[in-house]
Structures are given as structure tokens and as C-alpha cells.
Image (cartoon, rainbow, N blue to C red; front, side, top):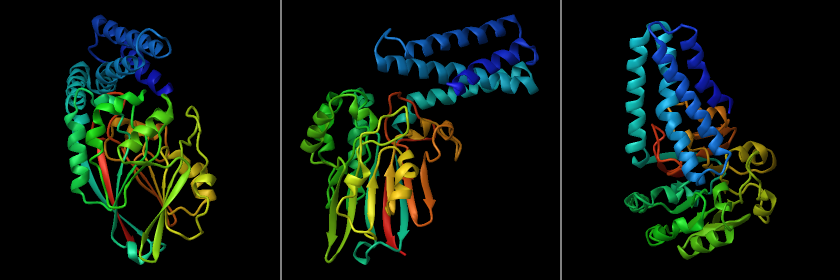
Length: 352
């Protein structure tokens, strides 16, 4: 909230104080009108004026296409003048428009490698395909993207596929039209999934049943053993665990039950905050896979608004021999991405 308010009112302050050279009364009124509009949108987020998703999408559309360019206008116009501020604001609006028109459909495949001294030799070279945060409702008008996604996933010829939650936005029915396509996602050792915070807005049993019908195995505080000859590794899945305002449903101890110390374990946990909350201190899990943050659907290198909310928000993190990979995900409640392109990640496990 503080971030949004700063973006809204800092430009107004600079303009009304006359610090932006060349800004006339019309510029001042325009800045203030945008702030008033955004305040109404923020109020709409807390009121039942119209559908929840419509509220969120309208708010973020206005925030990205109006409030953020206005901020850039003021920050650039302060030292360089009105003209420079206008040019930068218009350029920003053009770039942001690309994020709404095409960026959220720009699928990327990442190839990564993780080394671990605990990995059994029989699993050296084992390939795990990680995908997250489909938010299927956003692709109702672009169903071709889900078909492209599954085709790319199958083309990677991974040994295992894992999904780390948020299959839908609000309702399990969002997935119905995509079930035949998603059922094509297969790997020799199966497709495992956990639930994300959005997956609880509807009855979770309904969504779990639909995922099971697609051939996915949902691990609700459970684990599965994968073997290669006499060697084995464990896939562990927890229900959602995270910091407020998100609810905690899972139990990591239950998910780990029966697994011996030192065994190589891959934990599927939707919210990366869980890694520091519990995983590092109470388990010997070598690899944790998460999603949830979407990298704020906007990033520039290692800079992203997600850094304001999450210590671990995108890519690899390490503590000693322990690793966390946070996926930027695929969809979202808002059809927008800029440099935080939708992604699937293939992690090759290596001994060492």
C-alpha cells in the first residue's frame, strides 16, 4: 500500500511545488486527476462494486498505464524539464502496452543445473521440469497458449514434471476447457502438483479431483519415492504455507513422514517464504521449488517490485548446500508481463 501511495502522490508533489520546469496548470490537474482515479480504483478493491477479477485488472491497468508513467514524467521532468518528462512517460506507456498486448504470452524455457553431493549416482543427469502459477482463467480467450505450453513441456523430455500451485484464479471450472490439453503433459516418472493460495478460493477437493482426472498426482502433505535400481529420491508436497495475509493449510512434518535423513528430497511448496520459515531450520531438504511471486510480472535483471514483498522472489537462492528455485510462473490475474516472461524451467540434477 505504501508503494502504491508513493507512486501516486510523489509526482503530484513535485509538479505542484513547481519543481518540474515547464509544467503548467493543465499538467498539474492531469496529475491530480490520475491520482483521484487510482484512489477510486483502490477503493474498488475493497468494495463489492463489480467482479473481483475485473476490479484487480482495472486497477493494475490504470496503475501501470497511467500512474507509473506519471511518476516517470515527474522524476525525469524534475531535473531535465517538462519535455524530457513527457518523452519518457510516452515511451514508458508504449513499453507497458507491449506487456499487455504480447508480453504475457511470450513463453520462455530455462535450462538449469543443480549439483548435490546427496544425489544418488543413478539420478545423475535426472531432469525435472518445473512449472507454476498457470492461473488458467486468464487464458480463456487465448487457449492456444496452453496448447503451446504443453507442447514445449513434452518437447523437453524430462524425467519428471512438477507443478507448484495456483492452477486457477478463483474457480475450479476455469480448468475444464484445458483438461484435454493439460492431460497430454506426461513424463516417465509422472506429473506431481501441489496447491497454491488461489486454489483454495473454490473447494480444493473439486480441483484435486480434476487434476487427478488429468493424470496429475496432487501431494497434499504427502511424499512419493522415485527409484532407479537400488537408489531413490523423494518428492515431497505440502499444502500452502506462507506468511500473512495468506493462510497456512499445510503441515511439513506430515509431508516428510517416513523419509530418512540424508535422502535427496525435492520439496514442492507454493510460497517461497516457506523456505526460510520452516524448510531451512527444520528439514534437510536439498531442493525446494516454489512460485507464487510471479516476479511481480515486471522485472529488469535482478530489479523487480517483488523485492519489496519477498526476500526470495525469482530464480536461484542458496544457503550452504540447500537450494531454492522460484519460478516466475505462467499466468496471473492480470494479462501483463514485462521481462518477467512466462516460464517453464528444466533443472538437471548432477552429482557433486
